Length: 35
Image 1 (spheres, rainbow, N blue to C red):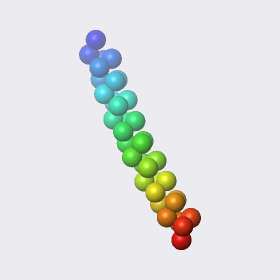
Image 2: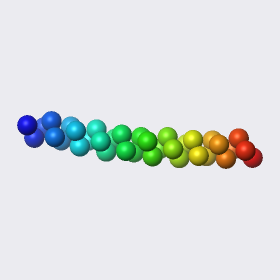
Image 3: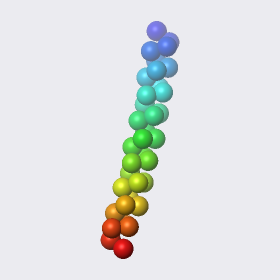
């Protein structure tokens, strides 16, 4: 069905941004710890 594809697309987009946000947060945190 089209709605399952839409949900899948939203989930993939959300997961992508979540991973990007966590990586950025972890990067800043590691820099902060080093400094």
